[in-house]
Amino acid sequence: MECLLISACLLGENCKYNGGNNALPAETLAALKARFRLVPVCPERDGGLPTPRLSSERRGEGVVNLAGEDVTEAFRRGAELALAAARREGCRVALLKERSPSCGSGVVYDGSFSGRIIPGEGVTAELLKENGLAVYSETGVEKLLGNSECGMRNSEL
Image (cartoon, rainbow, N blue to C red; front, top):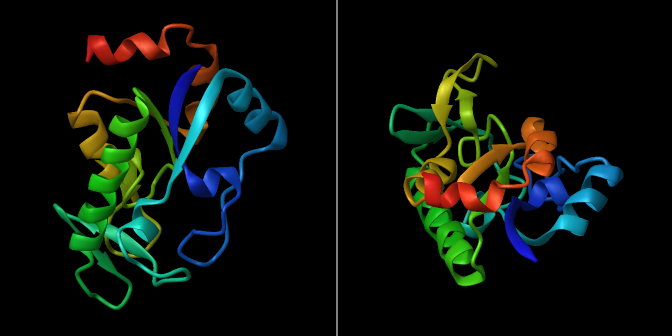
């Protein structure tokens, strides 16, 4: 069975910055479990940040929290741990939480804490893509489930 690296919050783990989660609908989770061996990661928590924690956003190449503190190193550490998990488990595909400063793929918050979205990548999504993983966000889960060649995309990247 193919391996899928997945944001733990999408599985219902309460590791989101505010202590909550972003659980996918039960039918979506069932479809993912039927097709993939799921490997949950939370780069922010795994990188050493507490739950709950201040919200953070990408600002240039770095990440800052709502108090203005630079938390880039924790995000980088969490990204490295997520990549290590993907390698250890043989994952070539990831499903990550969109807009997140760690997991966002394609769009992230702009760093002003105003709710404005801009094109960009979260720290983990960026690292995974640089290392050949196919990265999907939860709004693209149908595409992931419908893509019979998603495991082959790694060789195409």
